[in-house]
Length: 377
Image 1: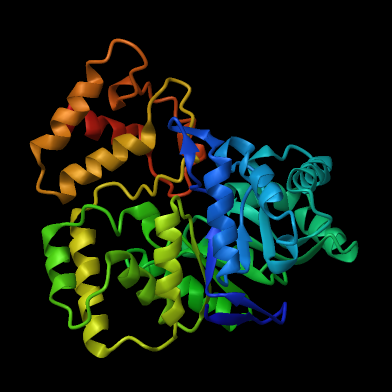
Image 2: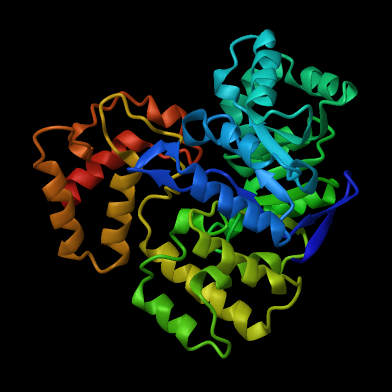
């Protein structure tokens, strides 16, 4: 496993990190992790060179941190750098900072964290926690030795990013960056110039850059001189950039773990040819011309108070657009729409907009639900 150096921490991290957000689940219940499969996957990853584990307070309905705590028993804690995140949406007053942090340490069953991030920062959440004194809280944790490095994960525009990163002496930041979201390169460059190490999340956009690709993209990949899977092309585009210190992948199966480990054996910066870079620009343009809603299925908007399965609705809608407006997706949607009980289709949306406050992509979900109904219903 190739490694890169985090500047402030003066440590070497595996270029691939394990994101504990999409672990295997039981009976389709996101909060019910298949502990046996997840444990085998994560420990296999660690045994084969991954030394960075990323989780967060809300992942898997609050159970991801508990699972990670169990996985890191029997000597595995000492083999990794552990990161979790402060759920800023849960903060109402200054005392909540320490209350939740101590709860996280208990769930993870550890005495300290290598890196602690403010989770899903945007203009609204940053303004709130900043006014409540979160920076003083982070300073206190570092002084007490409870965290080694501090940072934030980010979901907003470039101007807000600059505001946040200029406000504190951050060690790391975590941004959504991939060949589709290539505009985030401006954030990457600014952070690097400031001496802040960049960790990448959503490298494959929640699988959207891998599964059921448009025929035009498949043709581009098939015609490449070197044959690689769509996932490998996505990762290769990222690790080619030497400013990217670590790439998180939310792996759900052992097959994905093994495939990614193989891919990152060759994670060398500046290794893409001129022809490969041109091809990836062409691939990016094909996707940008087809995707209607920039949803990554992160689940932050869920659960909906009225039962709408928001990520599924947008996935189906994007598939409809990307794959030739096939009747397959209309029929699929209309079959769901006819359910008498537990209906979760877009027409159930009442426009309450609760979900929009939680969406890290800033999607006006209520308006886009009307589009889904119009085109698929």
